[in-house]
Length: 352
Image 1: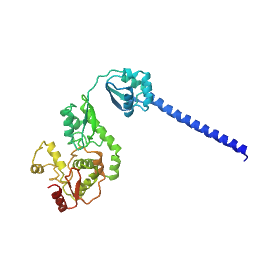
Image 2: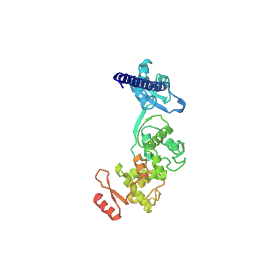
Image 3: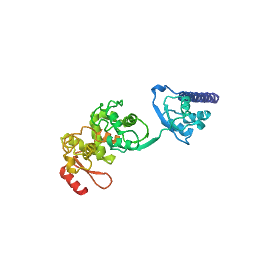
Image 4: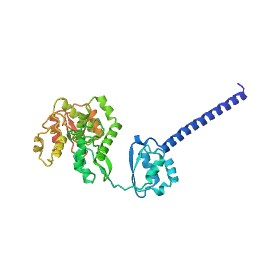
């Protein structure tokens, strides 16, 4: 091929590549524009989730845009801010609590936030892992959120929409399912809404941790896993040890050996309001929650565990341990033993 033909061919190829890049850019830009327009137009509000956004004095449209983005209501923060400026939303932003939907259009959102709302006071409460339902309710009530009597009614009989929740009327029905976390509640929020928030959070965390997939793989019974996870939560302080502690309890169950867990006895004392009882009195209580007296698992969970404890109960470590005791050194670490003799030596060394 001559030089002129080669140069002509190169020019054609260059033009073709440029055209392809230009077309690709236009197509990408068109898809991006369509996505922005869909975000501005919104979707079907009736099928989408409702979100409460709180606006406090001094909040800006920028903060509002970020809150809406975090909640999944909008996708494009800068586009929203630009349109909010055109709507003069910054100067017309009202203080209060506003309910929006993930399917709302920008115009619908602007309309909501231009409307004066009655400000609803909120309270933020942190629920640490391992607390019982009774302790959680007490903390809610002491912070001014709901009444104990109404919580008892809701917990016993309300339909929360999850098929793995024990049926209405079941003893200690929601034990294990009120997920420990930090929540912000309205002071006038209904008890139904408060409890639903705990359960929704549990379901969200369980799905994010693939709990249900892991359960299917293991073939284990879900509720029994929750019972054991609640005990593991109370007995462990170090996440890395949870699967080992789970193995101890599974090993005991396999040979029909009593679990002898302080966690179940402490729960029994709390439920029966016998806190302050002596050790001898506690261990003598005739109850299926007393795992020093009865074999097998207690009838229900005894605390509300984290996902790490649930995963440990699903996938325990394979060991030959039947005992463990704390090293009592402030680290939360345990020492494990295969035989009673080994365990008693550990107890003498670390606890006496």
